[in-house]
Image 1: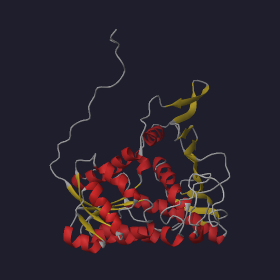
Image 2 (image 1 turned 60 degrees about the vertical axis):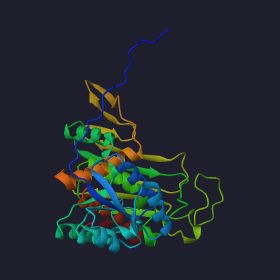
Image 3 (image 1 turned 180 degrees about the vertical axis):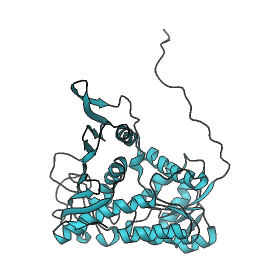
Image 4 (image 1 turned 45 degrees about the horizontal axis):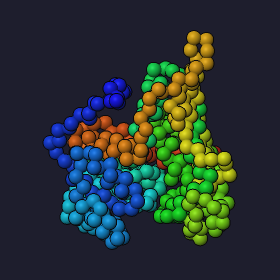
Length: 368
């Protein structure tokens, strides 16, 4: 017997876009994260990838064979001179973000860079100055602020459901997740460990949601106790390069903002905890919010109420990356406001840098 019941599936189709101009887009750094960018770009009709750059010939072969990018270069100066792209998308290790972005901006290309923005606030400022001097757009790849759970939090604060934000707790904790690829364990190339690598994601999205208050001081501590030793315990990511490991396993910090709010940050590659934790929570004078579950905590009609979103789209990395890259593309093409401009990257970098500086100094430090 045929099933004639009517389900709840939506038959709505996405709006078909009329594209009058495509941005000529170049990828600098063809490592692992570039694949996520390239897959996301397939969903953005305003972008055409015209060139790739990497110091490793095998990665240039990879981008050509897998994504059809014919123009490949080992030096970005050659790419910028010969291709003259509209946009340069920087997907390199952290230590290369600043020189690659500045070179692109000075060559007349707009630029978006992967997180974190750079190695330190001075590099971030150099990038911002280069964008202004050359009248180019600059953004940072902070994809988590495009998550609908952030929209819920922003709307709740805007509508007065949370009141004044008092405290934010950010947790990006892996029980045993020391990267066993790339240069994530080398401070000279990355600037730090879990705080700058994975903590940055939830620091940036929480900071965005609470209205981007100005950070004025930070305190922090860093510890290394596992990453600089051989892998001897069964774990998801074994056999990391412990001999070159110079970053922290765990960093705990606190940032004070000009408006009186406090952000507490806990970030680890390896911590003796029950399970991995990736979340941030807000406590305000009228309510609170939990990012991971999309839940607003407040008082209603004489009762304490937990208001959880009935529907929250299940988003993968490709969806979030599509959102952030499309926002930048539209910002370049028609002036759509950038959701993650360079100034936001600088603010986040100042918070991370403050925690690291405090750990070295053994005291609270000011943030200019």
